[in-house]
Amino acid sequence: MRLIMKKKYHHLQRQLRKEKINELLTLLKKQQSAFTRSREVSDAAVKASYLIANELVQASKPFSDGEFVKTCMLKAAEVVCPEKRPAFANISLSRNTVADRVEDLSGDLGRQMNDKIKSFIAFSVAIDESTDVTDVAMKDTTTANDIFSSLIRVLDKAGVDWSRAVSLATDGAPSMVGRKAGVATKFREKVQATNGGQDFWTFHCILHQEALCCKTLKIDHVMSVVVQTVNLIRARGLNHHQFDCFLSDNDIPAGLPYHTEERVNRGDPGVVPRAVSGLIRRPSLGSMNYTRP
Image 1: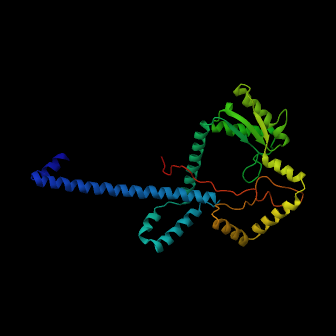
Image 2: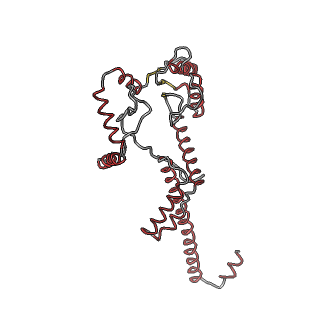
Image 3: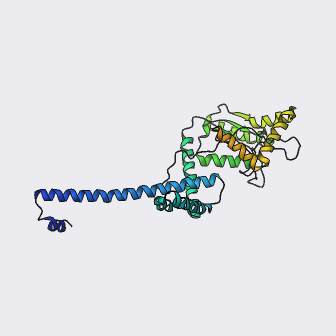
């Protein structure tokens, strides 16, 4: 290659040679810039696909909806910014791609959590029943042994330092707080075996304490108003929409919870669970790496 270049430009002398060198350098920089812009566009498309996949998951939408979202984006780009349509077309939102993105996001969150766990000086654990997010039991039985085994498996997988556990909050069920074989007793024994017998506290979850208070105290005059208010808002889509608009107009990025895990049961059918217990904020992605390693 060097010989070829020498034969091609050997006739150039002094100033002509300098001008040719500058010309070749300018051409090289243009080519490098084109590759850089192409890489930036590609990285932006990958990041956009991660963001959209995250929104689909948070909205509990099927992965296949990614293709519908892309179609909508392309239609909008044709009208708003036709020159940008190729950039939107580069965003991959097929069902398999969205599934891969969600898996990457989940793994990234898991790694962030594990990194945080390693820096814990002390930590506490709060547990309820052995159910999944849909309130369905994950096993045929929910005995103390079942719950304790599941809890140990999860914490060991996260790599926690057992000697730094300081307290446990439970719902007060017999399987949780039994003196001989309850989850709290088993958990305390395991922790104190690693921390040299230091103090370990167990607490009754504040939400369940509130529920007990609601059952004991006569506050029907308060609960009836709360229940009627939430029923009014949630009974019709228009009411709910107007309520969300009211929150948005007041710069409140939240919504009225449909239910919480803790329910106020006064023996009346159809009682709305602990309404107005607080406004639920949506989680953010936080610090994430959107590009594949």
